[in-house]
Image (tube, rainbow, N blue to C red; front, side, top):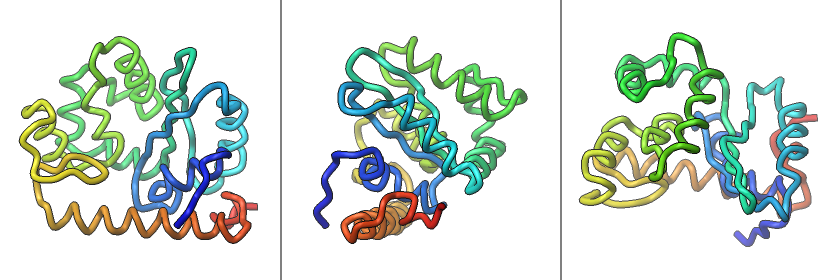
Length: 189
């Protein structure tokens, strides 16, 4: 699978395919500000995919890069309603009772204020709680293996998930290689 990374749709296919195809609640996309119209691309994406429940949100930006969260609203809202997730995020100061937008606002603040990246971001990205907790407790060390994230819990489940993520990426990248744009590949008019 050869894929160039030249346009926004191609970046989405490579880095956000599982989210775009509805099996992952969110993905991160880092874009160079000189290469992309981050505000324009994000706004156009939001207009085109709103009916599918997909959204993008700029979490942070510096002079060089912008970090974009691509998320499936219903899946991410469901994720944040999990009792264990709520407890952990509330301990980190997230306003769970105020809803998804408020929590994403707090995530943006945490990214801006943390010297180290806020490790609870794994919760927003749909990583298993045991892996998020394992990462935090072990400071990123002592993991069983690394794929789309560092795995501390069930290796077999993670391997299955990683395989499904790769299938999503291959599917979307193949569609783009055949000449479709990202919206055609997602069957969005």
